[in-house]
Length: 111
Image (tube, one colour):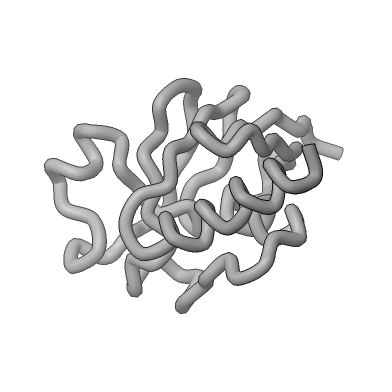
């Protein structure tokens, strides 16, 4: 069995474990928050765009219409196409940001 790493979603105080064989989006879905949007799950639609603030990962192929070369240099990638090789800190950007705000609100209500 492979290793698991901690992934922290910046700004909402949510954290989950993600196996090195599991993409980061699958772990986000497992958080159980309402409305985590997912699209194609294959790197083409761009719905799950995140910025990797810290940590290392391997990445699969992502559509250039969703992620430019400049995005990749800035470590903006698609959560469905990255696999952790260390603990990660992610900031959700783009279309998924509204849904992550809902998770933040859920966490505040429980806290």
